[in-house]
Image 1 (cartoon, rainbow, N blue to C red):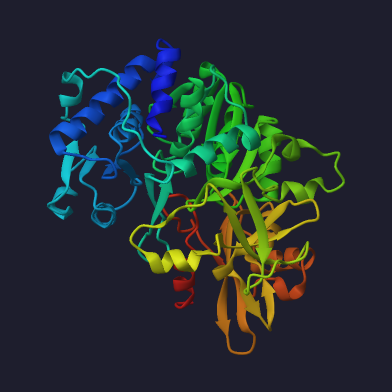
Image 2: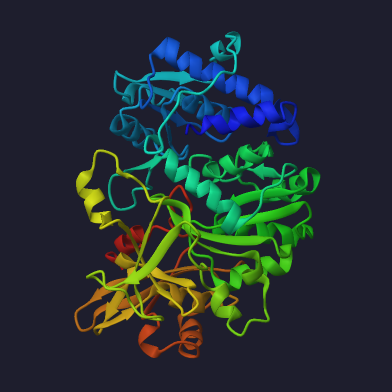
Length: 504
């Protein structure tokens, strides 16, 4: 089934319900939202000859037009290729060419137009008015099969060129249904706030709110501004949003300055990076019981495990701290295992690679059968993440398999060391990597961003680590930085930190 059918059904059921908002201002109701999407779909067919299965790319910052374009693409049966707006034009041009996109929508075409393949037509939304000038009845979207592509998601490419993850209608359906079962209910009066990029996880969560006829809100800043959200949430009410852990940390800092304590918030779903134990405890203390954690990948979007609101706030369970440090049990539509290098399932508590199977798992990588064969084996997606499952089925992430440090023949998991260092009040951010060592194979190095006004010494941090973890796990070197290198999704680039080590 075509994803655009959900928009059409909601528009017929609640045509006058507010749909798209810029800040607090209603831009479109559901009838207008669906009509605009239908016009876009009609023009893609009539002007550009876009056929079902063709790719159409979007390289734009968050806006209400972004959602209209997504549904316009699906209306015509095409495949959406959302590109992170923070990418360099050359990176975006690679994705356009690799995907074979027929049309590209941009908000600023100047740097990009000369880099694009001639087969791709570019649209500058700042001057494009044709979509508003054409009247198109809201008919039925082009029928699509479950296995047809709907979304081509490009990975962040921290270890080479990004790969196109092929997400089908069936993948997105399963992800959407699992949200209602495993993550949170959605109410008609909810306001889904898109402070994270619509090209990524936040955009994937639009479907559930379209199904329920909720409001879709793009902040006036077009992105994440902690102070803006502190003011906006109480005025909107019933705010739900997806946020990376780094966003929650910044929001927590702003909330402490302003006295904001979660007014207007209903649910914050967090994921996309490590949420350290100390950070989620502080966030719950400030904002209240409004958090749900999900663990997923582009290859299994938002749908591997979830840690419920109850698990995050429950302090009565004897293992509450262990559960709070986990990413929860498997979501209802997938099976999750922890295996060794040969694929043999590991016992409870043993560390291995996390593998997942189920309907949300991608169809494969676009035009890359070799990478697909490496990642999907016998129906199981090998995530590249290392973790443990406890006897109750709660999964705890340890690290990416490539980030494990092997010192003296013993595995050291950077996240464990990072968790300990973040317990020190003088440490704001930390990332731990391995450095080659002729005697031990590798040794632990910690990159530290100090808290405002603090100047921790290596000796102080070493004593702190010795008091909490085994001596062989503690860092042998501390490198102090003003900021850690991050990619466009806010993930720390450990590859860049390893490069820095060569000069130390």
